[in-house]
Image (cartoon, rainbow, N blue to C red; front, side, top):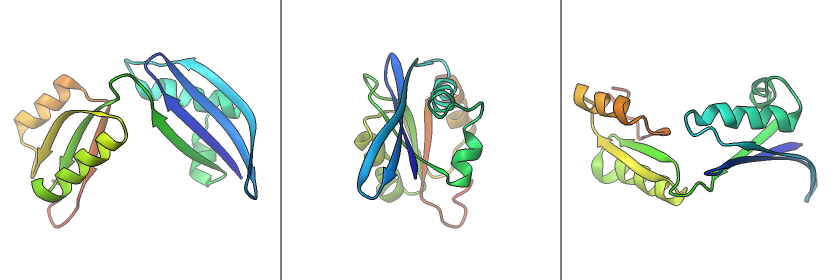
Length: 140
């Protein structure tokens, strides 16, 4: 089994490719690319492609041939907009999840998003939208 580990840092995005046989991990390849702070996904996928030595890593990930683990060590963490259906349950879960991953919560919302909420999200452009919960009407 192949495993790729990617860490998005403030300056560098690091990716490492391992093979796993039994309990043993063997480092196969590693790359260091500049973090693309204006578009995190661009640097993330560039690192994946380079460490796997392919033009497009998505088919390998989607097929299950390669397991993906990732983290962020960026100073201040990634900016996350946390959203939960119920403030005391799923929104609180979203906040705890974001904080435990080292993220900073840029915004948080419960219940349905209104036009003002959506406009605020578009203006601040958080790195990640974290949705939690899901019951009748939770997709609204």
